[in-house]
Length: 240
Ligand code: PGA
Image: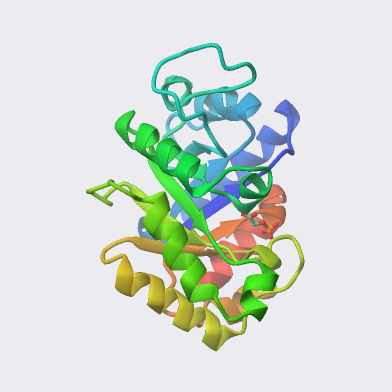
């Protein structure tokens, strides 16, 4: 099972102290062999975090990247090789908060290609909006996002998909358990041998329901991951 912490635009150097508790937990945790933890802090914390976690099984990832392979005049941007250089091994691409700010499937496709080429593993986010859900076109949207986002990418070995319904992110809402099972199954049928995670308002309470869905390979956790106690709680409860 994957547990990915997406810190979004939160965190300073002082917030790194809590990682020590997650490490301590993981060392003693009976299921640690089956548990992959990846922290995706803001760019500013990637280096200090990866240094702190040098000897740890916890990996570090970024929340986005620029699509250019080589450095260039792109003010404010960071490309995948720069991320790798400071210790990131993963990168989240296609998050709905960035799609909302104008990232389209074509740009996402370029970002994924460059990231894979530079040796990063990609956490590729897909998901429908509330309007699309109401129109009952979720499947169509997911197919479009997968097809365009992964266009001309042959091997899916280093790709993880995170299904994140836009209406579930940061709202406290989660899909109905049966619906979620069916959507994950639908994605899995198309994406053989690819890990499929769920993301959107995952917390220590609703994990009790979510863990029942046996085709999910893990969770992408936003808000609740900033509190290490909640994050550990989510991991523990997933197995119990
Ligand atoms: P949330 O965010 O857990 O705060 O809903 C999830 C995400 O945006 O990845």
